[in-house]
Length: 331
Image 1 (cartoon, one colour):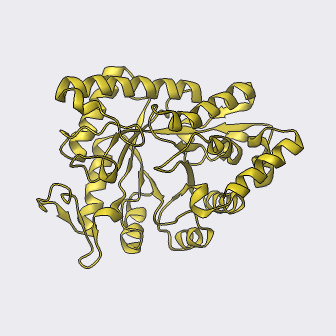
Image 2 (cartoon, rainbow, N blue to C red; image 1 turned 30 degrees about the horizontal axis):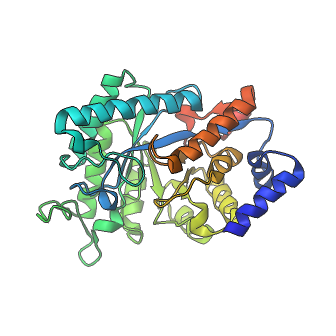
């Protein structure tokens, strides 16, 4: 992967164009305008990323109602700090400790409904309710029982009193989407539970983005299977998961051609390399996930996009509410 990234950077330098411009050329994208992505900011951690009882791994906010990436980051940061104060007030100082991706790990939070209620309260207190939507990374493979095909939403507590079937798990997601402004759900099932993915995509795919990470692993072959079987409607794109820029572009273009969303993503263990900031702007996917507005390894990506947006001026178009399919914004 390192050679692939270095080659892309060298190609941009040789062509005397910015890296995002060079990536757009490689991907066959327009270069007269560029789509600025909606950031998915991880504000509460659960699952393997936190020492609380939450099975779901990430609770994110998406500033879809902003008018620019810069405003989106500002709104997200204000909600993040409002949430920090709220958690301290409710549960004490320990509730505001941050995890690997910068989200709060509040051990006092009980379950996903409790979490979403607190996030909703923070949105209202910040004054940004209505401008910000919510996303989940469930990472359901972590609590899936392949023998019984059930999902144990009480695995971390050891109580085992919330073990749900496929249909019950789908109903859980449906109820959450009805109650909260949820617009994207990543890895809602185990990566091999195709039957559940097909059911949920058919039932809810027109209302919510269903993102495949473990399901697709940024592999073009696996992506094609997902498209053919209608497993989900969006790809989580990780360059260092598939291993090269070329394969990442192929997976992204395949997904967009099928009408899917593409969320460019960081990894749990990160560095301050900001390549994916250029990648998301070059590919024009309209959405990026790079953790909370906290920790330098996460902020490096957001800062790079801020620089790109400032450099582009009126050639930059924020994806906003169109983050799932923003290509028409370039016309």
